[in-house]
Amino acid sequence: MKRIVTTIAVAIATICAVNAQELKFGAKAGLNFSTLSSPEVKLTENGYTTTYKTDLGFRTGFHFGAFVEYGFTDQLFVEAGIAYSSQGAKLNSAETKTVNRWGNIVESSKFEGKDASIILNQVNIPIWVKYDIAGFRPKAGLNLGYLANVKTKENGKTESQDPEKRFDFGLGIGAEYNLPMGLFFDANFTLGLTNLAAKHSKADIKNRVIQIGVGYKF
Image (tube, rainbow, N blue to C red; front, side, top):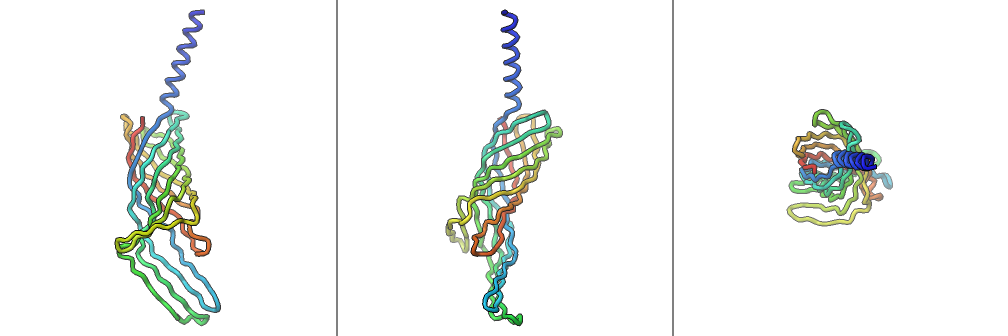
């Protein structure tokens, strides 16, 4: 009986040790290089067609968060986390042009954005599937986002706005490199699939985010 109890105790200790190795917690932070899709928008009314065109560039922001990683095998891992991310785009210029039914320009205006940007502050839930190759882990996954607020910045002045749409969904690809002591570096790209523009605007605005970060696993 004593031998059976000892065997069970050893088995439980072994299972617990394996589970402890498979499950890890971590934190990471880094830079964002983000922009937004900006196709032309055309509206026709009473024989007049107005075209709205924006030229958007990359804005530098930041992200930080925590995650949990589970290893099914020595090579296959799944990660889920939560992160705060400052995204958006730099507004280089915005142009409006109205033409009549014969193609003649009746009104035209252009805005040059010297210090203008659109800021999207999101809470993201990224989910990744990763495959380990000697510490290097290519990964693919999806991102669920909640748009906390939208801000516009121009000439040093910042204004806050309440977004009409709050939820964002996107797909991601990336890679990370893990060092033996728990430190790792990663780079990701997230392609937003949700149109975040207000319904009445007829625009199609989606996130495009490159992230470079560093983190630690416990």
